[in-house]
Image 1 (cartoon, rainbow, N blue to C red):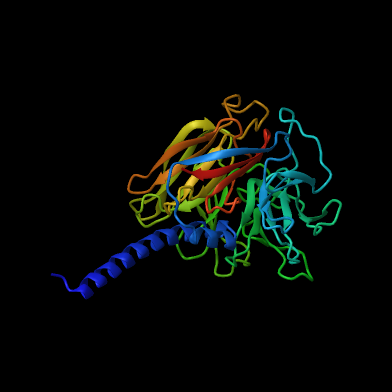
Image 2 (cartoon, rainbow, N blue to C red):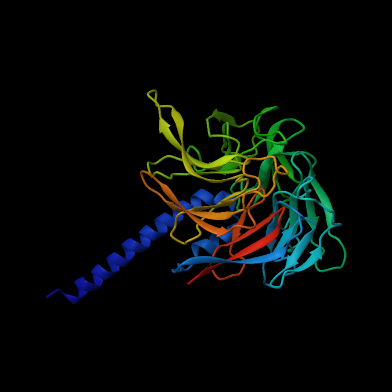
Length: 416
């Protein structure tokens, strides 16, 4: 017969082992995507109670009007509910009542584009209220709209920079301080640049740091492919483009970072670094912006020991995956992919333009030969130039929010 103390000790050891294993896997995910998400979202994911059951999504249509190809979320009016912001409007949760942020303009899905692409909320002026930051048409201005604190009227607009290039310019924690920065090309000089938001309410200017030389790849208005990830595993987030990556120095405010050439595939949308094949180095995932293909780029070593990249197809089910999110949909500790077809991106001129605007999530099964299981979410929405994945219904399940030429949509995750 076992001594009762031995039995108790065995239970403690088993419980500790599996708890540590679970935390290790979660830690890998947090380190990988930590530079892409606000601190409060990371805390939300770290504290998430794992829920089981079949995953489905309930679709909510906020508008069927073409107002933007980017979207943001946040508690605009401090009522404890997460609202949706897109283009010239914010939609008040939970009934999605529409309010104007600025003077609306009329856009036509088959005749052109909007003035609102990748978007984000943050408290820019440090007054305790979330503001709305919006990148305009590629090569045009990035603007932040000051929250009026429930006062009537339009929000005051402030220009961050007049010429922001790269169609996946967006918001990343470049300096690792837990706050999102703006990263994109300075189209006027051809330099990849990041903009640090204000650190004092007394001075609301954004600090600008050019990490590349002039006329660098990835910085033009219609460049495709941009991301942030620790490529050399030194604990600092590097900047990725399809032509290679800039190595982050110890001081990210230092200009002219070292550039490493790398063949990271064709013109794409957002890019992410992760060790998909579990061999100890970083791989990269990307998705075609206007053609066909979702890929992972495997990092290997040539005979001289230098890194090279082998590209593998994940899916060619649909075209124009111009928005790609990297998040754990099913709470298994591994980052999945959320993407879809950007509806009528070039007014009917792209491959597969008239096929259904689908939205999918791809379930990652990592390992020596990683696989992704496709799950159809919807076939009449698609994506814009990015995808927001966040628990906006506060049920500890990741929801999906998109805006494009078909409208603005919320997909609430459910488990049954």
